[in-house]
Image 1 (cartoon, one colour):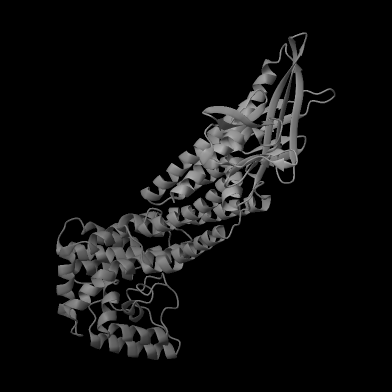
Image 2 (spheres, rainbow, N blue to C red; image 1 turned 120 degrees about the vertical axis):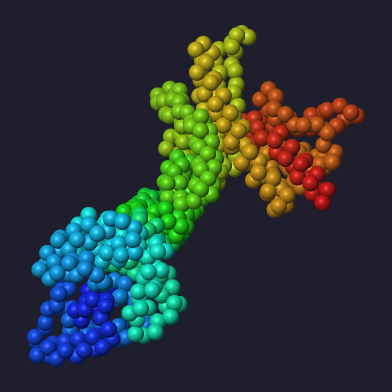
Length: 545
């Protein structure tokens, strides 16, 4: 129970705050003798709320507190001050255990703003708090908090309190002790309501205190908030330990773990919301820390899995947890970037049935992978691509069109090939165009970047059909030998795709001459123009260095 009320020294000894040091010692000696013969007496201010609070140990502790300058003031503040006829009237009613009657007396005489009124209010707040240990009463709760808040923020009260306390003080307390108590009193009041919250299993006691005082005390911090903070910090640590591997999709177990951790954090933050401390400075910092831990997971999902839909859902959850405008703004901007990638992905997704003699397998393209006949290749894993179309004619009249799209990784090759009649082939031509668009816009830049790294970082030669490319330039196969090495500084003309082949040129007296050609059906022939452009750029950068 609360040291400020149940174990209050004046309460234990059955005295009011006007008691002298002689009265305190005399009452303690008398009480000890009665307790030793199991005959515990009752006094006027025993309200029947607390049980078993008078023991030999509690009496000794009461004397120790009431004879200590720094400890006495706390018990003095949190007990009844019987100073005049109004207080005597209320005390007389309390003797009859008419608690509501005493409340009415002090309430009636607390209407103005005189010094006496402030002390009536303090007596009333003490009585309300004692009654709250027995009864979960909303009126007592709110009324007591309003009184405490008014008193502790009243300069008039503290001036009067200081004068009255020193007038009756036999321990020669100096002003510094009173000033120190005044600085700590909000925390002592908070401790009372924290204890009441635990007794009644009702967080409204803490929430109401925070709402009116705008702060929380050490007891709230230690007994209520610290266990919540501990769980949230453990959740943050576990989120940081989640490992997401490159490629593929997220493991179901990992997804469930993330979901579980978010639910745990939400449950703990809901407890803080119930306490009405969700927007306190300390909680805002913790909210930001949790949002950052979620952001780290989002970044891995975005960068390693390219699962933009899941990344967006999680970052939206993280934004809800954000505590400060700065953190929320940062995550909101990142959500915008994820949305752009998601929009691009949605725009590039298409599925079509590939025409065949017996079956019509489905080909699916997204911004991340292509899937066909049960095989899936992620573009980031691609090492080769090819696409081409061929038109067949009879007597000079076009009759059919053949389309081919191939993509290759280290382990797999997907080949999508089909022929259609010229008549009614518009949709098929459109699908082929979509495949080529994805190749040019997404797949080819990925492969070119890999090949440039092989050539200039690893010093390897890249072979595409009959063309070989290294960090000095390129050459082509010839019978029993190889052609001259065309060095990068000597390249004058850009390679290009034309009539089903990739052409590389050499300068011949100021005009372009075909140096080599590779059918576009050959793996990576379609990216020769881009690859040579990239190599020229990297070579020129190396020369400048």
